[in-house]
Each structure stands twice: as structure tokens, then as C-alpha cells.
Length: 205
Image 1 (cartoon, rainbow, N blue to C red):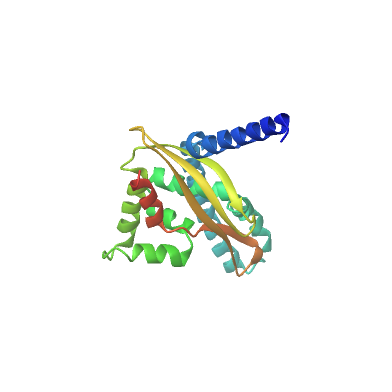
Image 2 (cartoon, rainbow, N blue to C red; image 1 turned 90 degrees about the vertical axis):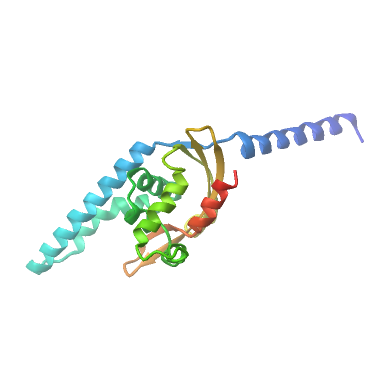
């Protein structure tokens, strides 16, 4: 075989190995601003609360509701991006809001996770799960490395977690689009990975 071809093959092989090492061991992804994520969660919750009040008023006045949809359009659009779902989830962890945390997960998945613990107070169970993910508040950085899969269907988001004690771990988080009675325009991503699987990845480090 021609020496030039052999050299080219070796260079390509070394490039691939270098890229693999970078992605697996070095690349910690695009960082998520955790404080900003927490603030966005608070703003979204406040907007939803206001919407609920407005819908009640509209119903009492027998006014058409259609025009109100634009007020929650931004929230829906954000949750149609897998990275934003990750931001929301970790925002709820920073805020220590278990009721919001569980809403980022597909209903059947989170229900099974919560009922694995024999405690009737499921919000306390959720709070404990959040605490295990943050490792008792040591979480210092979250990075989104990549999103793989069929966009608008099922995807896997690979994230990098860093903790204040120096521990680093990369975790895959699966998501799927789910809609509601309003149709495709209201489809958003929900996490389908078990919380216990995420915690197991973290604790395996």
C-alpha cells in the first residue's frame, strides 16, 4: 500500500481517537447558568399563576379564551427544546422545589420512581431525590454536551455535572415529546429517564 495512503489512514485514526477522548473525557458541554435557570422557573410559575386567575375571570365573563394562548406560548416553546428542559429541571433543584421538579418527568416514570420509596409524603421523596442529584447542594455546574436522536420525537441529552468537591460525571438523560388535548402545538419534552438511573450514574463515580 502506498506510504502516503498509510500515513493518511494513521492521521485519520489519530484524529478519531483524539476526538473520542475529547468527547468522552474532556468535553463538559455548553454551561447552563444555574441562577438564571432558577430565575426562569420562578418567572414561568408566576406567569402560569396569573394565567389561571385570568382564565377564571374570562370564564366568569363568558369571554372567548383563544386570545389568551399567546401568553403561555413562550413557555411551551421553551419546553420544546430539550436543553431548556434540562435547564428547568436543574433550576427546580437549585430552588429546592420538588413539586416543580417532578413536573419535568413523564408521569408514569416519575410515579414509579416516587413509589419505590415507602413514604406517603411523595414531595419529601422527590426532595430527597433532588438532594441526591445535587449531592447535598454541591452541584456547581451543568453543561449540555450534545442532543442525539430524532428531534421532535425521542432524544438523549448528554450532560456533564460538576460538584464543588471536584467530582465530575457525564450522564445521559432521555426525553420524549408529549402533547395534550390542545394538539401538536402544545407538545413539549418530558424526561423519560428514571431519576434512580440518573442518581445511580452519579453515585457510580
